[in-house]
Image 1 (spheres, rainbow, N blue to C red):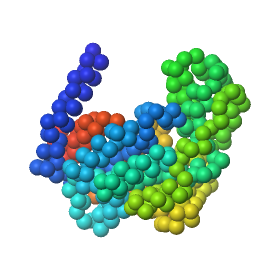
Image 2: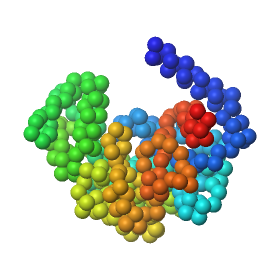
Image 3: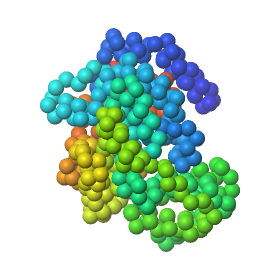
Image 4: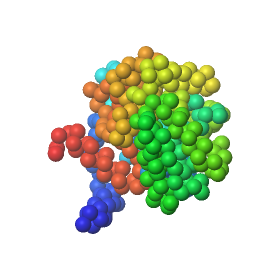
Length: 338
């Protein structure tokens, strides 16, 4: 029954897009609430990135082409100025953001530049041209490349066992270990990483081309893209102690500014999902570090009442019709029509 409802729902969403109803709505009743879209990887068959946060280049260009016609894509800096100055948002305003700093974001920037649009790329600064591996991809790499069929990880005073006997079991192990790391502090993360490398000693060397380079980032700035901070090592900030959190936030900003010779104004809290990825103390640290805004993974729209240190975003997916359906649903809810 659930699968039937899903198929019907997908069909309705496609019809909503294909019949141009969404485009008509944007023209006849422009929205006064900006949308911030949250992308990650723009790639095809990237085995180091979860498919749930990947959009293919072909789908991405289809989306950007549509947005260029039916939305008013603005920079995050423009959005912040509107909120601070209490001036009207541009109608149907859209801000495009990209988390983590994957190398494939360079192609995304080229596509944006082709349509004369801009985007904001939140960079995990400590993983750019560094020996520091991007741990989210590292976990996936180790568990998918090993020939071992089982692993045990010490967590506090107990051992957590994970089956690696098949693709489904490996994917579940990746999900659970990732959640373990997000739920713990930085030292716990490092302990798990060390244990994985020790036990999965047959895994291939971690690829060195996953993330952007400093030169690519400079080229993206020349394409009029914005660069933001995403911590040094993608830690879950609420679980770090105050000193560690401050280093992750402030050093990220200073390193990006030093390497790129720009002012880095915007920040995004790493992680999300079911694990708390920011709180009031972390928001204060981000503000004290000199950031003008901070984006979350919490779903929703922006308004004049939005907290600049807690901006809500909406998740981008492979299918444009799904994105548009979610946006229109958020508009209707914001307007109090349901």
